[in-house]
Image 1 (tube, one colour):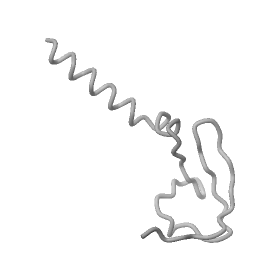
Image 2 (cartoon, rainbow, N blue to C red; image 1 turned 90 degrees about the vertical axis):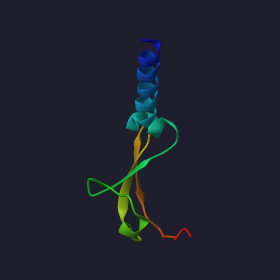
Image 3 (cartoon, one colour; image 1 turned 45 degrees about the vertical axis):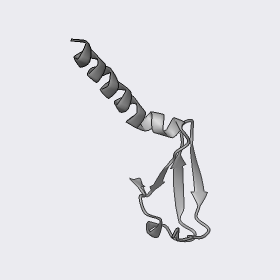
Image 4 (cartoon, rainbow, N blue to C red; image 1 turned 120 degrees about the vertical axis):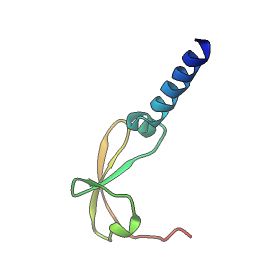
Length: 70
């Protein structure tokens, strides 16, 4: 019984860590363009307006330039 309880507790902790709200609290942000989440920098272009959703607020920003990460 204890092993099952420990397993459930560990899975609960994992789920909490992956909760989008908790991910944002750790300093990550969602980039949103035209109501959709952006996952690739190539989808953004200079002068695009996007929203950055953080843990406590959303800000609107304008893309200035793209820099490829190697």
